[in-house]
Image (cartoon, rainbow, N blue to C red; front, side):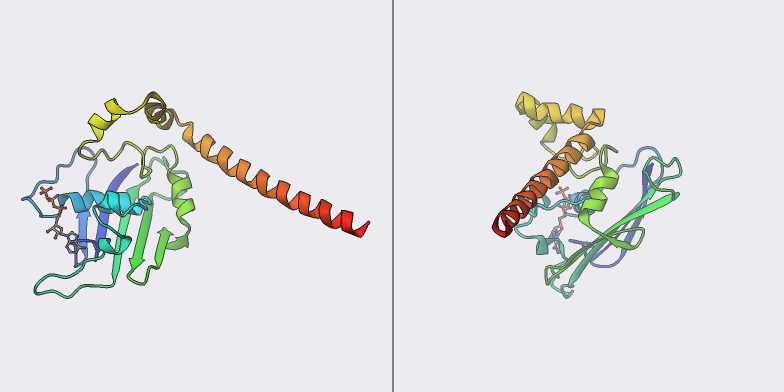
Length: 199
Ligand code: ATP
């Protein structure tokens, strides 16, 4: 699996539809200061489910939408699609190409799609769990993060190994199962109360 294409419209400085094709192997993105290199890596993290506006260098999520320039009006929607080459079926989907899309409207409406079908963020997170591609995985290392790894507490550093070893998926599922169990316990106790009242 590899990222073969990214399409951005209305995302940060990419007002017009911008399509960038990637080949297998190494790609370097070069350009003058302020030309949008970091915006490009943020677009990737954004589609993968980044929820923190601050970590996208904004103060609210609306800041990812192109907010206009001196001679260009702002737009209302940001849309980014990542196209992943999945010929090796690394992602658990029987498609040679898998596209992940996120859109965000100024009215706060946020949508996610897998292969153009509307999904929940949870579906994207599930699809990417332990693939090394999630928003918190180490496929994207931002400036300062390498140093941060050395400064981390041992428990925080352990998550790096857990991600690499593929156990995060099970921890995520365990938390989900525990949450459902708690909910079921609540329901059960309510049923018991009702039965008590009836008897
Ligand atoms: P450097 O090499 O200095 O790190 P860079 O190539 O990484 O620069 P970015 O930081 O990606 O550049 O891009 C910064 C540019 O993006 C700035 O000109 C900024 O005005 C523009 N920009 C950021 N958010 C928006 C937005 N919502 N609408 C329009 N332009 C934006």
